[in-house]
Length: 319
Image (cartoon, rainbow, N blue to C red; front, top):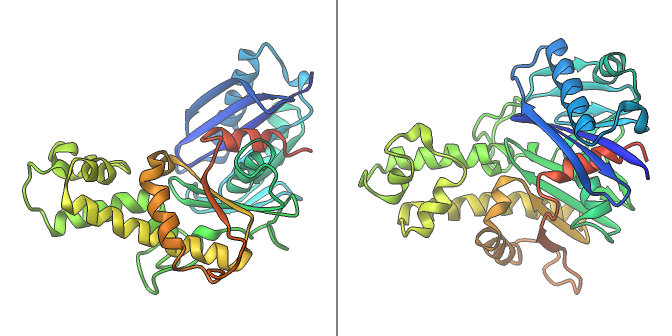
């Protein structure tokens, strides 16, 4: 039996998992990501999380062929350098070299959204697709593109940054330096910002579901607040959710118009809304994609692997 180790390095958590030949995670470990990250501290945390996961599986580094890591940002797989990661504040970070020295094992790195898409392609919602896209709605908006069964990352490994396409000219500032990026509106972070803006612009009744769910404190708003309040009958929350879905669909339609994938799956925390999100997304997309009259349409579905996609995809990168 072969075993693989994958690490999903996110803006909030570092998650590591041991994956078997059937793409099942048999052991895992997790810790918080320290942001901004000091290179030495980040490498220490990655190594500790990896070793903890292996220990939980009763394995050591000798039992795995490589350590795979999915990291947000522009990740040069050939050189092993994270050239830029806006959410982690990393610039020209020699991740592969430093972690290999720390662990004494081969390290393979890839963009985190690409790794998640690769996981979905091997064991999840994109399995069986020739061309597929995985969108992750988390701290940012991640995009992973699979073309003819291979990760597409462009000539400089910066391809696939779908979250940094602009949907509102001169709109909200984004951590990448642009304004109006899809990520600034469609991520969980963007939804929180939108919810707060609407609540402050229309404070209304402080006993309304929006305010009640936030305990009367605007700083307690989460990515779930608007959806939960909408289900509780709050009309302002319904307005927020409708606006959010329209902004999400704007970017999704762009993705489909460019790549026309067989399947586009949506993951990340907001995808846990399931049909409350996907049904209106599908309905609105039908009116916006250029291929509206084509007999074959892109299938829109929820990512199947949840937060495990990044771990599984990272673990299999060496293949």
